[in-house]
Image (cartoon, rainbow, N blue to C red; front, side, top):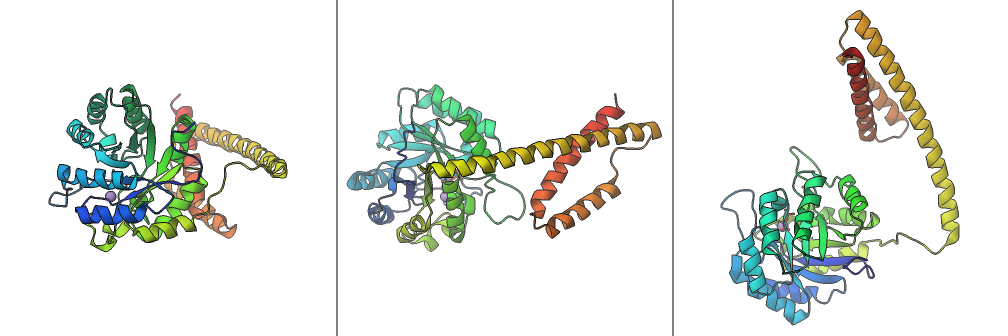
Length: 352
Ligand code: PEP
Ligand code: MN
């Protein structure tokens, strides 16, 4: 049973990227408190910024504003800790929950030192995914926190860094939180659409996807005057816009009481199973031919990789895929995987 309530989904954590002033905190928490979905308030006190001379948070002096606003409105407050000193200061001021940021989760030494500082404390801790797409590192950080005896842990999916152009600030790589859920079904998982999207206009589609993947909740950066925020201005929304965002979400249930649904679903799944069987037969057939080609190339002293042939396959198949209405990006990824396996097999044959 998840420690995060599963009724009245989604469980929402909202609040500014950074605490900027007492007025800002009071204004935003006051407005958020009338939103029935908002179950906790977030604000960054110590901000890990990419470049020096950016706003790095106000530090300890901002903590009483956050804690008092939470008390006034009966909402628990959560902030980011990046070292044991942050933990100590946050605890001293009575912060209710802590989160470990993406730039901290990457470092086992730091996470371990935070875990050590949490021994005997047993405050809820949320662990963001590391900036790099490393599921084991994420799981390992959580295990370190569990090792300190912390009982209430949640994971926060905030997407992964990449180099180059992409629609979002961070790549969601949904397969990673899905695998996380498979390996740790006991832990609640919250989506942070703000840091995935990086743009307030894209929050809804990310949040909707998280809801359709049955995430437990959302962490959404909310600011009384987003355009003037001192950090992450583009992705923050007003408390009123948060109400609209939540109202626009379609919350579906993972189960239904309608038995007809399962009957039909069962027959559709059977069809999927049959298609998968067919796919495997085809993979087997294709890879056996690759093996034959490997033997033939070996006997003829010819290299494995033929760029011309690969280029032709990619171009032709993607055209074929487009003609069939298939997503060319999907087809390209499948082909790349098949090609990789084909090369592996030929390599084995040739160097036996
Ligand atoms: C944040 O929540 O403001 C933050 C710094 O997030 P992340 O660690 O996901 O970058
Ligand atoms: Mn932020």
